[in-house]
Image (cartoon, rainbow, N blue to C red; front, side, top):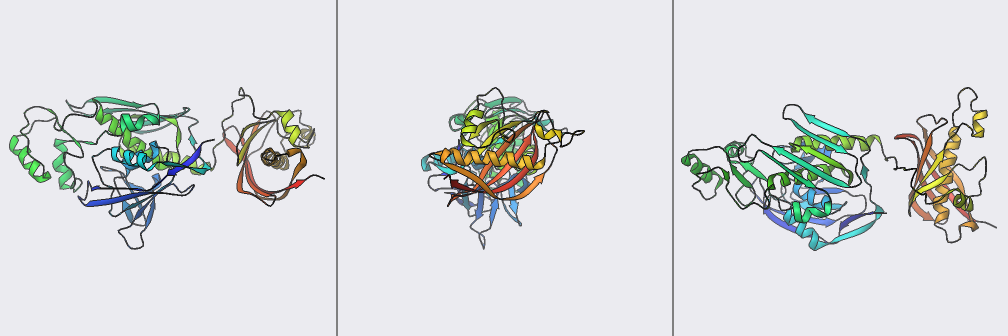
Amino acid sequence: MLKQNTLAGSFSLQGKGLHTGLDIHITFHPAPDNHGYKIKRIDLDGQPVIEALAEHVIQTQRGTVVSRNDVQISTIEHAMAALYAAGIDNCLIEVDAPEFPILDGSSRFYVEEIQKAGIAEQNAPKDFYIVKHKMEVKDEETGASLIILPDDKFCINVLISFDSPVLSNQFATLNDLSEFPTEIAASRTFVFVREVEMLLKNGLIKGGDLDNAIVIYDQEMPQEALRNLAEKVNIPYKDIRSLGYINTPLVSDNEPARHKLIDVIGDIALIGKPIRGRIIATRPGHKINNQLARMIRKDIKQNEIQVPIYDPSVVPLMDVNRIKELLPHRYPFLLVDKIIEISGNYIVGIKNITVNEPFFQGHFPQEPVMPGVLLVEAMAQTGGLLVLNSADEPKRYSTYFMKIDQVKFRQKVLPGDTLILRLEMITPIRRGISTMKGYVFVGEKLVCEAEFMAQIIKNK
């Protein structure tokens, strides 16, 4: 079972802010389990903290801006991409300005410092968002779209297109996050010369220069206009006679597309969970990236816990014979057929419901419905298997449930349904007492949930 990760040690970086031009100091610290990415504004009274989550994004023009209680921080995407690609789930970031430093316009320096600091494994299980079906967001006006599809790992395909003779169409692919440090991280942001004056007027690139962006000259301008623009940006004037990239060489032939891939990762990192799925991004930008991230966040909130993956062709970890060795229950009251997942703090079991179940004779003859109390019993038996499986001599112990709370029945269970039962520890076992949370799924739907307290007793 994969565990959550944090930094093994702290690290700091210093650089200019793209929007403000300020000298910024930023420090990344280890954080506890289930902390997520949080940003502390140490330059403000009270040092307010902002959770880096998609629903807290308030602006996506020239970078992603998150805000809580009128406190905001911008240009976070390159750092978020580096943390996400490194598999870091929990981090506290302290910054003394309203934005992250732009550095060289890529994720390279963040990646290098993460590698130096190291990564520490934590006790909590890594909580993946598993893509079960196609999800899509579109912008009909711009032609942009993001599609996310099921996959057994996280991967991205990016296609960019501009009305430009220099940068028309490019694509970039990331098939595995292990490729990010060497193939993607060093790709810088880019800007067209024709956009610079507008950005300056709107105060969006006060700290911009040739060291933190690829500058693309794709529309001829009088040399005097270029000279004036260079003075405004405070960079050396170049006599440019042909269209192309001003600050060559590029890190790679498709560096702009690779940078857009960084932006997608950084924005999608704000769902708060690592993803198992493939993203296909056509003409992506921060706005549409955030729309997909918000869609996923909404799905996460509506489904507090995702249904476990069940493949009937995979050999179970416990078959019914092993289950009967651990549990005293027998026909007609053994309500777990097999166990497909088990770890130190959670278990997933399967129960197939057929019309031949004896309780359907009386519940109810004209409308067979599985009794809700038996759904609770099935969860209880599955939870008992989790506890007994960890015992040195499981046959010498029995589990007895002391309390059942917060029981909710959401949907009928009928003949032909397959129950997927997931039980997880709420707290570690102490003095023979265990507390658990249980869920029952049929297909993608949660049909029942409850909390349990059980006592583990040694048999006489």
